[in-house]
Image: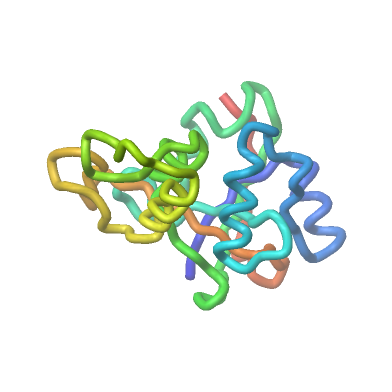
Length: 171
């Protein structure tokens, strides 16, 4: 599966030296660690996943390095073009991960949360991030294929999956 990951220059250099790049929980903000632990348990990962882009704003292809937000302005980065074995990739909705899982919110198309909402119910609702068509068209969590952004997770990155790379300075 063709994917694109954006990494800082130091990570790219380490990747080239070791031939493998793995996630590191120490790099995850404290406020998001429980969400990452849920994801790791759900996917059966023993460590923090690696992330890549599958589709951005409904378009399949490389992320635009002219966009801001990849890193702090001036940071040296590398976009890495990958071909990852399909069986190692889990796709999910970027918007649902960011809004609901990272914020510890219940993921539902209903406007109101149940009165007896528990943490377990929230976590069960988070499974919807893996349903790429989840939502109500024109309403909450609209799954419009022209706008949806899909992210990919995998246990690690391997150098032999690299198709190419592009250096850039973040804006």
